[in-house]
Length: 166
Image (tube, rainbow, N blue to C red; front, top):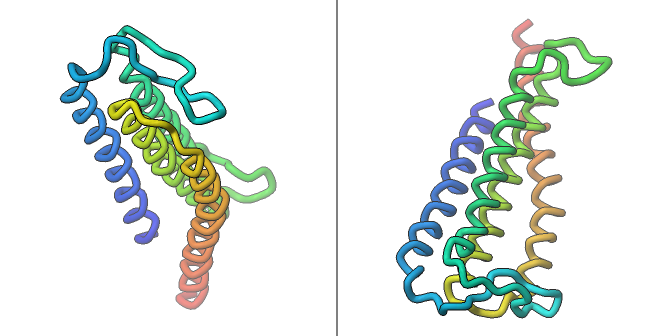
């Protein structure tokens, strides 16, 4: 449980700090954006949607903070719901709860990195390199199951300690 709490606090803090740093950076560089600036990328990595409205430079933050709130609410719901697994007793669902909450934390962190990259490219009006998309997909494909395994191992160790005490 200590590992989960540490990761929970760290992932939330890192995600919020990352989004906030890029938000402040965007606010500071907003006057330097061209009158018509690119804000969305096509399949070739070049801008395909342009805007003259400077508020649209904050699009990555609407999405980033929005996903942060959604995954936080999902994590909170997973911690408060009485019965998570259908055939499990209430006291046996701690592992499922921690797993759901851990995955929500990991997704918050991954999406914060993604939207921060996006805002970086909007600030600099630079081409979006699709290696970032591939790497992001690889991180999600590898990191989520890896972290789920670590969380499940932590739960297994805690259950073993409880059995040894009994």
